[in-house]
Image 1 (spheres, rainbow, N blue to C red):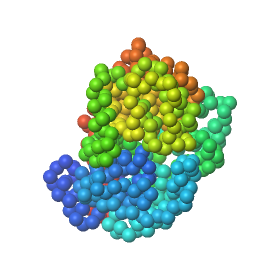
Image 2 (cartoon, rainbow, N blue to C red; image 1 turned 180 degrees about the vertical axis):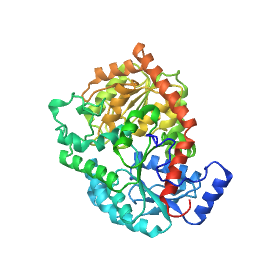
Image 3 (tube, rainbow, N blue to C red; image 1 turned 120 degrees about the horizontal axis):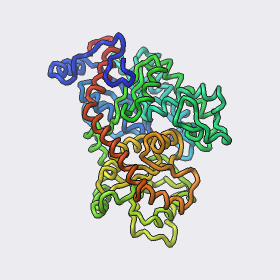
Image 4 (cartoon, helix red, strand yellow; image 1 turned 90 degrees about the horizontal axis):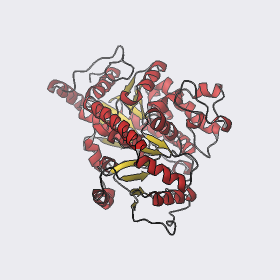
Length: 478
């Protein structure tokens, strides 16, 4: 099979009829009526929920019945999605460390896995025998094992990059070679087999015990190899061909590159225009409309990342003295210690601060010329697909991996660095937004956008291959 999972059927797979023909749609409608379905289980965080629900919309559009199992914690709103999607709560009971905003993310993920394993197994069992396959978030290592124990074929959805997943698979070897835990004296050393990553770019969570992080990653990798029938990655070969090749060479299961999911599901994007859009969206877009093309810097550190008050102040001063117009999302809870007052004496005449913004609309707007980002994978993909250069300020987890690819592999951004002050921040903003360096980055970013659009135009077959493989895993006709 092809290494990217883009156009090949898994060995011994039973192909379904083409999903684009009336006959195929009739067959799949019959499967729905017969109760055959795919059960999806997203991790309950926005950056994981969105791609899983985008995948759910794509599978439903190809005639498969879809049930979305979900936690009560951060539960999705069924009213914002197609009525044919069934939403099934697992009714978990969570300890405080699983829901506390002050818990480190690794402790939270370990607690969620422990608390949700049995409720997920019970909820999935209640749907049997009418489940052809389960698709669970790749961080749900306990759910991967639980589905396999029930005899349900299960796929892992990676909502991060192929490069991040490859680095997770390599963690046991990196630990044996002494790269893990991270040695502060070796931060700028290249990591063999994971080029262009340096030691400082490996997955890490500040404040987390190294053994806890390594243990979590090992459980994820072990569950993938032991329980999953395949992996689905929200990426595409035009930007991660080499990484996809190496993943496929390492795994015995097929890998399917089906991204960028957010570009394949425009209806899902409309569903996200909820009450927040009504409150803030039109005002953001109107403010952008008043600015020249490529003149505004969009600033957002995502839906989870949290920064110290000192970092916030230096960001604020840097934006103010840069002389560049900016739209800055300061999310409630994004600054440790509570929402701070803005530093006294700043000139805010060039900027606008909002608690939320319609990110896809902002990145697609003609006035947006750069994106100061934490480099979460969803944000990175959205910026790549709109041809917007990035100023990288990774905070934790996979964001350091993504930032290295943005700045080094693709050349569409600048690295802000872990330690910065207002002067360095202002200089980085100006470099990103004006001058010769800016023009070169914009040209490369436009090239990635073109390739992403070409991918979207040809993406139907990639999803069809995934549906074919899901059909091949079922014991009943699909």
